[in-house]
Structures are given as structure tokens and as C-alpha cells.
Image (cartoon, rainbow, N blue to C red; front, side, top):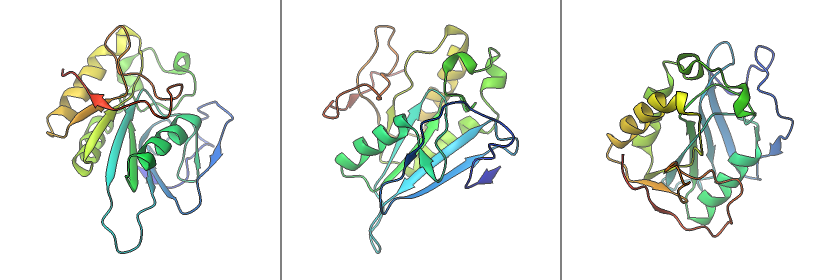
Length: 189
């Protein structure tokens, strides 16, 4: 696993929208050596000498966001985190295959989710005050992986939150939600 810049020369996740990090925000990320998978993304703006307040967002799958730039979803989630008073944002996904379009995720759930993904989600959840589930609607073929990830996160004992539910019971994706959308408890697994 590597940190820092995405090894894009090995894998192109698609997508062309890359947004600058806000001033004073330090980014981080970890990837598989092949660059196909991103297990963790971080943003930290904790004032010097202060203890960080950390929140974890769990999305569907990573796109182009890296240590140096954000994508629209991560940019939106960072805004939520800042508005809620956090000083550190962690991002993981139920699937860690990097693709901007869900249709570009491998059909095989075993290929769409690396062996390092769920342990990394658990580690990040243990650092967070709570976990915001924001993975949206995924094809039913991925449900066993999604269920395993959600169970592992729930076993950390961290509160599970969401920004609403879709009709199928999945956690709403934050990109198109109003910035004043209230957090609510995720209704359990």
C-alpha cells in the first residue's frame, strides 16, 4: 500500500473534475500498489495544539480524489464535516475500486473490494466520533460485500449516522443533498 499521490499511471479511474483543497487543509490517501484501489482518504485542518475531532464518511467507491485534490463528492462531505465542527475528515468506501462511474466497477464483488478495504474501514471508524454512511444505491450483486462492511463498522460501537435513506433502505449519497440536510441515526443493520 502506498500513501500520498495516486499512482494514476497504473489505473485511470475516469472523471476529470479535480478540486483544489481548501486553504489550510492537509490531504492524505492510501492506495494499493497497482493504483486500482484506494482504501483511505483524509483531510485535516486541526489547529496546531488542538486535539482533532474526526468524522468518517463511508461512500460507494472512490473516484479521482487524492491527497492533493478532491472530487465533487469528497468536497461536499468535507463541507458537511466542517459545518458540523469537525477538524478531520476520513473517507472510506464499501467498495475500494477506483471508478468515477458505477458502471466501471468490476461486476465481480471480489474484484471490486480488496482484502484491505474492510480492515481499513474498521481502523478509521475507531478513530472517528461517528460514522456517516453515504454509499447510495449499489447493484444487488454487491450486497454481501456491503453487508460485511457495514457489520464490521457497526461492531466498532461507533454511532452510525446518515443523511437520509433511499427507498431501498440504502444511505443517501450526499452530493445532491442540501447543505443543511440534518444528520439522523442510521436505523440499524
